[in-house]
Length: 250
Image (cartoon, rainbow, N blue to C red; front, side):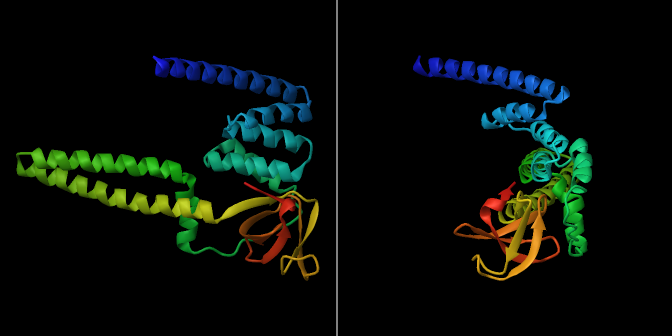
C-alpha cells in the first residue's frame, strides 16, 4: 500500500514538473519573440535548473545570447546542444555563424583517415546511442542463432548461421565504437573561454611566462587541473595553463 502511494505521489510530482517546464518554456519563447532576451534567458535557466535539459533548450539559450552578442555563452550553449543531438541541423547551422564572432582563428592539426572517419561518421551518434545500437545487434545475433539452432533444412541453417555471425561481428564492432566514444567524451573535456581576453601560461602560476593569448569563445580541451589552474590544449596542438574561472566546461 505504501509503495502504491509513493508511486502515485511520484507520478503527480513528475506531472507537475512537466507542466511547470512547459509553462516556463512557453513564457521564455514569448519573451524571446518580444525581444526581451535577458528575461528569456532567466526563464530558460529556470528550466535548466530543473534538469529538464534538451538540445532545443540549449539551442534557444544560444540564440538568446547570440542576440545579446555574448560570444562565450552563445558558443557554449550551441556546443552543449550539439552534444545532446549531434545531428540537429539548426544547431549546426547556427554554430557556423556564431563561430565567426570569435576572434581566435585556431586551425586544426591535420587528421588521419581514421580520425576523419571517426569525426564525420562515428561521432554523429553519442556513446549512449552507440550503446543502444550494440544492444540491438546483440539481440539480433541471439535471435538468429536460435533460428539457426532450431532450423531443420541445410539452406536455412546456412542462412541463419551467416546472418547471426555477421550480427555478432557488428556487435563486437559497436562495442569497440561505444567504448571509444565514451573514452573520448570522458578524457577530452571540452570547454569554452568566457573571459574577454586571457593569457595562457607555460605553468600554473601567475609569474610564469605568457605563451599565447585567447579571447572569448575559443574552444579548448581540458587535460589537467592544479589548484585554480587548468591545463588546456588547442585544436592546433598548443598547450598551456589557464585560470580555471576563465573557461567553462561543456
